[in-house]
Amino acid sequence: MKKPVYLTPEGYRRLQEELNHLKTVKRQEISADFEQALEEGDLRENAGYDEARRAMWQNEARIAQLEDLLSRAVIVENGSFDQVALGCQVELETETGERLSLAIVGSHEADIFSGKISDESPLGQALLGKKVGDVVEIRGKKGAQVYTILEIKPL
Image 1 (tube, rainbow, N blue to C red):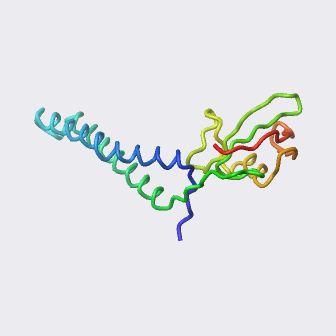
Image 2 (tube, rainbow, N blue to C red):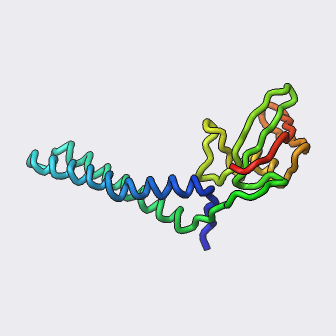
Image 3 (cartoon, helix red, strand yellow):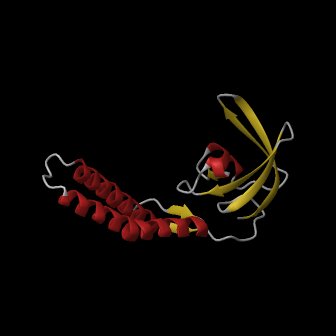
């Protein structure tokens, strides 16, 4: 049995939109590129044809990947969070008083630059199941980092 893919409703919607775009718009663009390359003649040394073929394989591989992910998707619904769980927003404070807000999402939605961390990451794992007021310590290469949970809310 394949591993389930945990997604927020927003993450599921984004993957569906990407899949739809690849199957419709992107396939049509690639088809047009093939037609243009065929008009150029000899395919043995036709860079346009080679590029269209590469784009087609990449597109089809991504379509297969998305279909697989979506077939295994488990959508995490928002609820009331009295403890940190997948699909929640966590407000944290460091020992130095710095505040940060992180969303706990499945690994396929994680994007640290958008403030979304995976439930499988070291910090995500340490936060799961904790409550407001709990202190979490993460040990890493740069030493220990301590966070206090200030607030837990749905995404």
